[in-house]
Structure formats: structure tokens, C-alpha cells
Length: 287
Length: 287
Image (cartoon, each protein chain N blue to C red):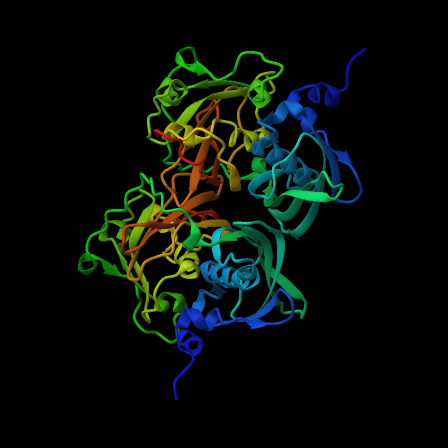
């Protein structure tokens, strides 16, 4: 018995969380699996990808299936379980359509709690002109075999299930923090792919921009750095294979920091850029 | 007869365009003066500052008067004249409040046309912690006297009235494009202040991030580079005096580019960072 292509695709872990159920015009239901949590919260990149899929379903009818720019304002921490999404088309243009979306869950008191509000402009990556004048160079990352796997040992009781969704190989020069010697340069970079081999696409890039450890680790600040706002630009459809991701920060001040991410594909194309404003972890004693 | 401070403040050109008229709960009217146009469109930074003021009026009641992050999606070109704004509070938190806003005008057919949809998180810059660990360095810009004034000669029929709102002195190394020799490095930087001496504040920073010539000029691409999306982070209240602004791009591809701006105040503090996704001008013959 041959499987439908859609069913085969949905067998990847990412496609399972992106398998939204239509729930009326511009409304969808999602199931945020426990596997996408870190600590007790669902990773912000997963929420962004789920929102990205809801936008895609709504805006593709206008011929604009791909995220070009998406801005997410994080309102409260996402929990594993059911989520509801709603998408509104704001303006449909010839080459781009802009929309607004919201992701909510039912809170402990039974009332809906909004997790993320987002704006996005979608277009068609395949119909962009071929002109490439980028001056950006891919980050210099040692070969895979010389990098450090970020996957923690299997531990059913562990609180980092998110990390098991990836094969992540970090540049040894940017993992000093793991052994108590952060570089203080404000950079973490490495190779990234989904552990089940699912190839990158524009929605996977939305996940990739927030998948690495917080760049604050490299500043000697362990702990959580919750995202307040994240804007991602998807600049090209990624080629199959490993991605290279570099996160960096230059301005930790006033208890906040920006974290910039860039994502390169296997053909050396800068396929996504993002910036987020995050709350810095409180400094620990001795750092 | 002594004037009220509010009236005195409103005598500056920027405060005139920011003098919104309340129009019901969360609704305001603005008058976008001809002086803020470039070509036939109102500059996007002015629209961002006007939206920023509407957010401020609505969110200040929660004790959060300052923009920390604001994302604007530009839907259609703003025209001089009346505009209507509406602001909705999405989530009010202890240290920050997030809202959504829209700026519309009446189109030629008499129907409302939305110009910009925005999300923003506001807080209190004065209550942020003092910790500053930035590794960013101010751009190296020659002294004022060695820089090039960007103000065009007075010309009532000119189409660049926006430039007359500023005293802008550009680094000679980044104005080769004005004499046909763009550097192709993708950088323009210089000193900036409002021509009437109005000191910078957080809303003026929203104007400053989109006030310099498009960075595409330095890539040898004259012409307009319309903003699709712009996100600005205001990181500190600026000190009085000249600002230094640097705009740069690394990735012009597929007919789009990112333009990053950083704004430094007279005390060498990185007070604002922004990134926009813009449509690249079509290449001219011979470039």
C-alpha cells in the first residue's frame, strides 16, 4: 500500500506540529507537542513556524505562499498542548500580501490567553528576480567532524526535549560557556539540521533563527533570555542539506539585548536574517 | 503672558506633526504636513514617529510611555494631509505593555486606505537597570566641519522638503554616490539633528532611523527603495545634542535588501537600532 505524499511529509516531527486543523475562515487549531518545549515553555521559533504556516494557508490563495518578513511579539510563554490561531488579511497586493495573526491557548482559569501577536508580509520566493549582490560572507565554521554536538544525553525526565529535535554541531570556539569559559564575544555558531532528516524550507528557517542556545551564554550569563519581539526575513528558498546558523549580539544594556541570527544554506546563500529583542538573564554571582 | 510648556514644545516642527487630536478611545487624528514629504510620499520614519506618539498616548496610562520595540508594515504610500490612527492594547504587563496600531488616510475614491499596521512593546526607559555591557563601538565619522551637508538649496518647487527638516552632515567617505562614484560598500553615515534645534527623544529616534538617504545610493542604485517592514528598538533615552547615524546593508538579493540603522547619542550610547526590509530600486543602465 503506497502512502500519500502528504502523509509521508507529515511523518517528520516538524510537519507534525505544522499540521494545523482548519477551524473556519482564517482559523486553525494546532497541537504543540511536548517535544518542542525547553524548560516548561514551547520554544519561540516553533511558535513562529506555526504562525508562519497559518499565514501560509491563508495568504497562499493570493499567490503569496512564502514568508518574506514576519514580526512576532511574544506576550506570554507557550505551553505544550492545544493552541488556536487566527489570521486576517490586511492588504493583498500584486506581488505581496500582508496579514496579521494571533496564537492563543486556554489558560488555567479556562479563559483564552494570547501567546503571540504577529504581522507578516508574504510573497513568492520563486518569483523574485535572480539578481544577487550580497556582500555578506558565510561564517567560518570548522567542518562538522570538528564541531561539538549540542544534543544532550537521552533523558526522559530532562527539561530540554527541544534539543532532541535537531542535529546541532557548534563551533568549538563558541562553546566555551559549556565548560565555564565563555568567550564574552557574544557569538554562537554552528551547523544545524532536523534530526529526522526533514529538509529545510522557508518555515523551517523560522524555527532555525531561534534554535541555537541563547547568545547570552557566550557572555557568561546562563539562564533564560525570553524573547520580547522577533522579526525574521526569509530571503531565499534554502537548498537541501545542513544549514549554518550564527547568532550574535553587540548591545546588552538596560537589562535587554538584541540577538541577530543569520542562516546560510548548503549553497552558501544567506537564506534568512533575524533580529530579536530579548530580556537578559540576571547576572549570576561571580560573572 | 507666559506660554504653557506644551505650547512651547509644539513650536518645533517635529512636535507639530506629533500633535495628535484625540478622537475617542484609542483614536487620534494627525495632520501630515507637506514638509515631511520626499517625492510625493510622506517619509516612513515620520509615519513611524506619529504611530509611536499614538502608542505613547494610549500606553502611558499603564506607566509605559517609551517605545522599546516597534514594528511597522508599510501597506501604501502616505500622502500629505489628514490621517487617522487607532491603537489597541493587547497585553498590559508589569514592566511592559504591547499594543497594535493602524494609520489610515482617505483615498481618492473617498474610502479609507490603510497606510501602516504596527505592533509595539512599550516600557519605561528610565526604569531599566543601569547595566551596560555593549561591545558595539560608535561609527568613526569625521568631525562636523569635515562632513558634507545634505541639505539641498532652498527650492519651493523642490520635491525633497523632508531634507529641510534636518541638519545632516554626511561622512565624505560615504557620499561618493552624490558625484557618481558610489563606494559599493553599502554604508552611509553622518551627523544628524533637527534643523530647528529640537532635541532628540525616543520618538525622534524613530524618525532618525529612516532619515538618511537610502543605503542603496551607495551601491550605485539611485531611485526610491520603499520600505516593506521596519522594526526599531529604542535602547536608551538619548542625551541632548547631535546624533550619529549609520545605515548599512549586506544582502541585496532577489530585488530586496535589508537596511540596518544604528543611532548613537552625544554621550556615545547606542540609543536605537533598526532593521528594515526594502524593495531595491531597479538597476539603471551602466551600473
